[in-house]
View: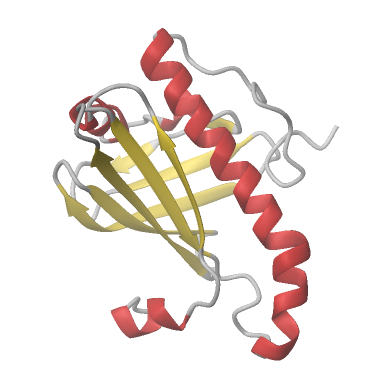
Length: 176
């Protein structure tokens, strides 16, 4: 399935979380464009093998502690600004994700991650808002918040984030 602007706009209720990181946007860009970068800062990522890198056409995998393996396919790459990707199971439906950098007047960078989730898009809009509000939105908000906290932790401390460092997650942590 091709993700055109019209297709992306048809997704209802994207989830977006932003965080001021405390360093320049160039430093954040350098981190998020390093091959296998999720292994440094993603608290639910066991490993992040790269198939192709960098730029449009890049592909990597996210191996979650829960056992899920999702493929990321980068469809837009704007140096110093951000990138967009599709993420999902191999051969399955994909969510659209946008990573965007900004910088304030003092030179402090922020990163915003927006997910246009594929979940529930096939359900009539009059019905899908209930599970979206009850399950999808809170789950993805806490997920994105933990990822951005991990990025901030790593870029400031230089220490890789630990598994579940900012709390467990019902979808992405171990199911023990």
